[in-house]
Length: 335
Image 1 (cartoon, helix red, strand yellow):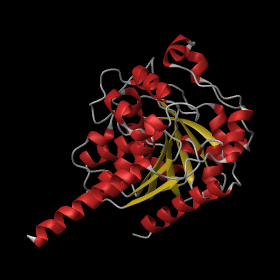
Image 2 (tube, one colour):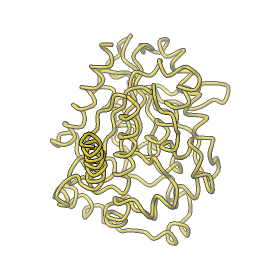
Image 3 (cartoon, rainbow, N blue to C red):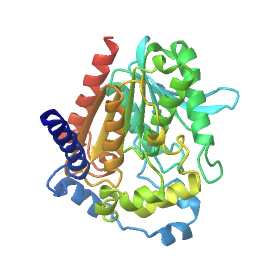
Image 4 (cartoon, rainbow, N blue to C red):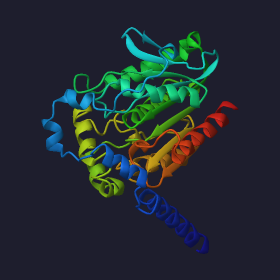
């Protein structure tokens, strides 16, 4: 009887701990730098109705001005029979570099806009890698599964031919922010089904939408805490899914946390932010992977917003984020 009581107590404490972890990250104090950033860009929440009324092109190409970088450090190619556009960043101009396949954010609506290119160029330098940035097709013109198909086919092509462009195909990391993080989770799961997951050494997901169902959005603690006021809103999440995969929320290739068997997936880095509606998604998916025996590095950044938007390259938190990923890359590449 004593063993049974202890077992029940242990389970209860574990569940309580997971619940608290999903709800807490910091002291609910927004980083003053980020508060200043939101004020600087004159940030204003838009309701679901306002988002629906805007021209879709206005949402697709919203972003800051592009920051210049040496053009000789990037080449544009088209791959597979579908001619998927890919930007290849190699500022080190070396061969046999680790490969990062990057899937951009943008709510499954925005393409790979020029303002994202500088950060991809920086990533190649920061991680000493060659970065393949996939410009997958986006909604509403190309709804699900177009983004998944492009992203997965690009992964398979790069895993086979990436060495011809300076990469080491034995050291592949797939990386994504927001919608791109969702695609990373889905790609890793599809690779497992086709016995290709060994080609992925690491998956990195920042601001992961793991469950896109309306039911989850209305019950998740972080969705309620951060519904408005912190750049990424609950309304924006609703709008994105409405355009990307209406009525298909229960498909594991839309909501990857619904996949029953995640055992054997590649090691994962999952990054969350305290003031992100999607914070709990990342925490729950990290728990699911960990319980299945998958190696997980998980970090929640207190005081920060979705995908750590607003941080500058030299900010302490940005450096911590980069060091966290470098640590995981170093470990998986040694095995």
